[in-house]
Image 1 (spheres, rainbow, N blue to C red):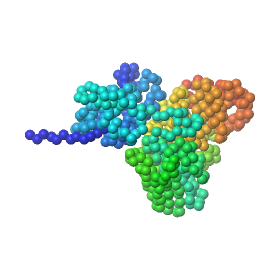
Image 2 (cartoon, rainbow, N blue to C red; image 1 turned 60 degrees about the vertical axis):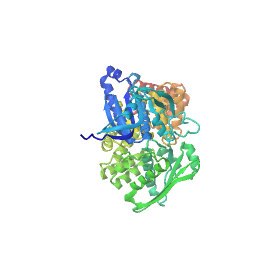
Image 3 (cartoon, one colour; image 1 turned 135 degrees about the vertical axis):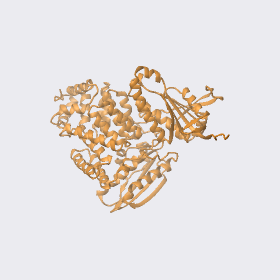
Image 4 (cartoon, one colour; image 1 turned 180 degrees about the horizontal axis):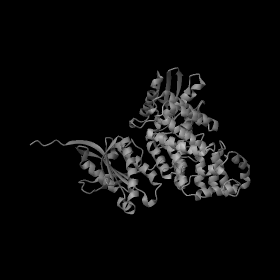
Length: 589
């Protein structure tokens, strides 16, 4: 009788389970199941992103296979970081913490399942890990040495249940550096623990100022594409655009932004032909790691951007995989004219003026007419409408609230993988007092793009409005580290000030609100500045600001105040109003 051949292969195995799952279920079965479902989706996405495959899931456990130990450890770290971020918004007794074990070993293949010693050791290592911890075997450690920068702590050899030999075990320190330690608040920015890059604005070489928006759009798309790579640290586009039109010293720029690599280039467009050049520079040495010129038809523009992105990734770190599906919104834009309208609209949006917002909305409505089935114009329309609400420029709050929500929801339905659509939906949900949905959308945007500065900003502002002020500060400071030079940083600083204000740290709130209004006196920054001065009893300092603040108010300031302070607990709205009244604001009830 023929004996069937057993198929074997070498695999990195990740085993994870929930610490204290039975206790969580005993306290609240439905809430635990909802949390588990959300976390399981996050885990599944991260395993796939790192080229892994889940082959077992029972109860509260997950077991996955990777061909690369490096990718397996990266996946484990990404999982713990994502779930730690999500746990911060749950009560201590409802937090769902995972233990993760990783091993590299020979496994037997039976259909979609894997068996054998390689799997069993990973499962036993998971039992050794602490809640929220990662344990790896010596076999994994040998393969990742010199390739990953996560600190490892050896805990020696252990005898594991039903394993015939002792196993060397290491703890993985997966916690990211706190943004304060990285120098966000003062001093020189520290280099992140992963390859860090800034994309400088590509120069418009067309000789036509009207083509500036096109060069800016190319820069933004390449930045977005790079930022989807979880193991890069990518500075946000708005922070690099402060260098637009300037002769720069790449070493100085790298120090100011806290990055190791700089990508720069130029764009020349003539009719339906385009030439794009790019060069990647290691800032410390000035060495060019990669340089290329592309002469193509406009129809190939997205392919060129992909080639530049892949070349940069390959030059910096070949280990990073270009996983299909982790792409920028631009690949879904089928109509070049609609794409062109969106790029022009973004140029107006960045001007932070009501007349420019009107022009941007007009362009976006035009883009939607040209192609209603792409996500970007719907997403951007939602952002424009939310912006004019928050800045006090809306003449019809009720209509703008409803339309922004509909546009954001529609953008998510078209492209659920674009973090910008979830960012827009977060804002629209929050202004409609849908707090749980807003929180979920903010978390989802960061799950999709861990370099997404606006995602951390949105998470911070939601946390402020649900009363999680300390957690909000962490998110807002991470946003500032990713986007240190944004001309709109006043908005970020306003919410940093607000988080301090509600903790009654009025001096800190005053400090950050002063930073918020330094570049420009906008409604949000002035509001928290006045409230802070009011609580400190410094009414003489507040008096010169009152006329300016009142001039920025719409016809119905009470309605604007209520819409733009969507607190879950209305005592915080009253706390803010109290500070404003103390400062002399008289038109709030």
